[in-house]
Amino acid sequence: MKIMIVMSNSKSRTCFGDGGSYSSTLLPILLIIMYAKMIADVSSFQIESYSFSKRSVRDKILRNRRPIIYTRLFLIDEDFPNGNKLSSSDQPDVSTNSREQQHRQKRQDGDLLRLEKNSSLLRLAKLSLQDYEWRNGFFKNREADRRVEESLARMMGDEASYVRPMDANEKYIGPLGLWEKSSVEWLQQVIDEEARRAREIVRLGGILVRPMDASGGDEQLGPLGIIERRVVDFLESIRRSERERSNLKVLRPKDLEASKRGPLGEAELRASEAIREILNSERIRMEQSRIRDGIVRPIDIPGPLGDLEMAVLEVVSAEEQRTIESEENPDSILIRPMNAKTKGPLGELEEQAVEAVKRLTEEEKMRLRNIQKFLDENRPMQQVNPSAIGMVERFVVGIVRAPIFLFQILSRVRDLLESEQLDDIDATILKEKQARSNGKK
Image 1 (spheres, rainbow, N blue to C red):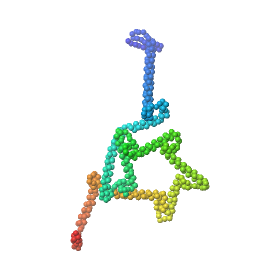
Image 2: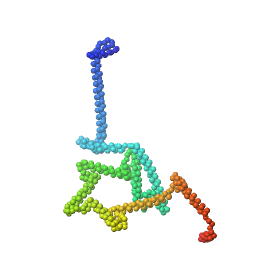
Image 3: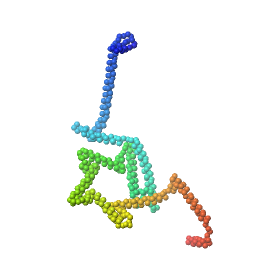
Image 4: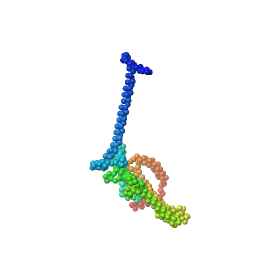
């Protein structure tokens, strides 16, 4: 069956190929039905999308509220370990405790991040332990060899040679030796501390351990742990004092009680006391100047400015005396502050500096002699076990000494060729000396 739709300006007709009847109202009805179905589909899609978005928003809100609910339950369990519940009148106010809850939540998140295992950190800790074992063994072997050399030198009645300033004798050790010795001891403590921390990280499986948390049992904190503990305590005291100042509505940190005052309050208190002392001394000086109808110097009034002026005046007077002494002795080109009759602060400072330089010079001279002695005793070519450096040194020394040795042989042969026969008198004297020496034996 064929269907043909004929459209005209005024009306529409549907023709059936089998000669059926025409219907002018069928096409509008079909169009209305299709339009209604489209509207229904669109509205159902919008309703489903709205319900889906509503469910997603609700799930997101619930997910965001879970940490808060967990924190509240945690607070309740922590405050009531015996299982007692709060009454309706004792329920915490969310608006007043929101800041504390956020702070506790951030601290829990930081602890969780710090307790997270890290494979890279674990590998680094293992490498650090291997490096520590190798380095510690190397240092122990060197220290053992050093002790053996010192004991052998003492048995022979001599002093062991050394290269490093810290290895000098207690009688000859100087500023560089003392500084190096203290630095090496501090560095050794740091290395031991880091080894303990790496060992703890390996034991925990890659969890980060801070230097201040690395001490366990009878072991004490190392240098890094002590520094971190001091910094943390310093910041914690500032935070505690500032929180107390905010709760008490105190404007200046120094106005808190002595037990609640932090580092900022102590610093402000010292600064304010110094300024107050200066103001009081200046006020007294102005009053004395007005009473005496003249200028009163700060040195005449006790205070910080008076102490400063006294120190400057002492330096100036010492330099004036040195200038007068130089004018009285025209033969001397320059009189140093330490050689003046009146030694001021500059003279004492120069004397201390000269003494330190003198000790340092003597220490380095003694170390240079010991380095030369050490090189003579420990040449690579004279070692029992030959090494590459020893073989190279032996080869170079042989090349350098060969021409010298040949020249000495040739000069000796020339002397023998140029020698003459002894006279009779010299031969007689030589025989008499030989007979006399044989008679004494």
